[in-house]
Image 1 (spheres, rainbow, N blue to C red):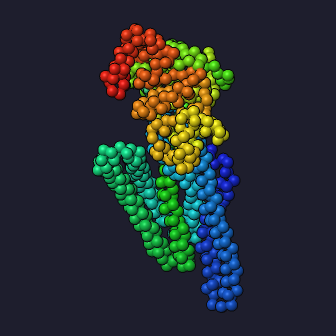
Image 2: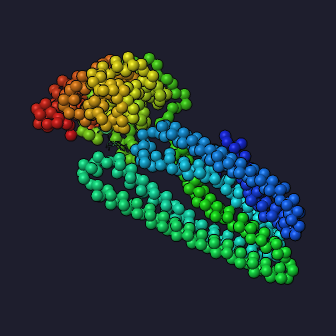
Image 3: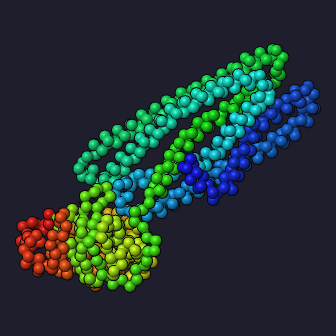
Length: 585
Ligand code: ADP
Ligand code: MG
């Protein structure tokens, strides 16, 4: 019920259209109901022998019917156009809300939800909801008016004949309800199976490069065929149900005609019924039967619409873990003193702490480097600063202010991040760089590109800054993409910088190029650098070695070498080229 209440809420902005829609639906049904009545009343006139009487009666009859059908058609136009539009408006509203909400959800949500499912919520679920939103009330209305109206007329015309028909209807209703349950189950199964098909498709397409490079197309095709065929079988069960429902429905309808003819004939013979009423009966049975079909379709639509709406609510009810606290403040005139004070952290789905009691400070404008084996928690430490996750113990401060007391937007505006994976949006190079500062001028963009050492390369492209980099920027090399992402951060110009393995995916040559840009970027900014290649962090003010057990060593490069511990060991290994790639594992 709560679901329905929340659903109705979305009608509110469009209630005028909604009520007009229902009024039009009423008119459409009433006109259908009126025709047999009009026919019935004019029968006596039309059956007189005098042709002049008939001719005189025809004109007003034709005019009356003409007006009636014009009104009905206009109503139909309104229902089909504005009724659908109402559904489309509601769909738009919900989709926008969902999008806005998706943007707010935290990293922890995205760790456990797949983008294929989210897409299907944004597209197909909402479409089902819109269909139901508009057809639901309207069809229910039309059907009920027709069923009740025609039954009332059946009783009025001849109550004796209506009684056996009423009994048949009760049978039909009970039968429909039982069939309906079976049908619902098959509809549900249908949705699950098409979900499997989509998931399989999405997974293969997302990983198509891997599929092709392993030449595993056959395996993927088999997997897809399985889910594709599963959907077919599920539809088969569904159509079987529908077929038997339709068949029985038709049989009941036939029985109604049969009873009308036989019992009606009997009543006529007994003088308890007028022969002309028999024809009316047949017409009203037709009107009476047709909405039953519509009602069945409606239950399917409702099932789809409401289950889609429930899935929609599920997302809308997921609260972002990370949001502004009540009296969150803006960060002003950031100097950039970053301090981790005794922090601990564990990921939600996992009780073992990734970090416990870690403390360090970075004076404003200075740099710190985190090194250590993969899985030690370096990225996690970085993610805590812009509050992608919140610490579970201790606190992190910027210029003495707890990051949790700051407005998220303001906090994140002051932190620039360069990561190993670069995501370029669909669009031009210019737009991608400008992402660092919406509304940046062309001069600013070029200046940032120059600082990131990518300007010359861009200039040489046929379209220059207007080169389209396409989905995921596939047309650029890893190093070029990385420099675009560095240009973005130059443009953003944040006082605090996180470089998380920014060069790890690159070959030595590109790394050397980018290293220079990164050094320029880090100048006068508080910087946390994570790097596997130790040569890149030699000049950091402090180096912290993080292992799974926490901070193992800390100090400057020279101090750590003198200490002759873990760092010195790895450094020597890399320096002496024992490990060709120079990776610390
Ligand atoms: P590093 O960057 O030093 O390689 P990470 O910070 O990425 O290490 O990971 C530290 C630990 O946290 C690892 O044991 C890893 O498995 C775990 N971890 C990382 N990300 C998540 C996550 N989203 N959910 C659960 N555990 C995670
Ligand atoms: Mg990492």
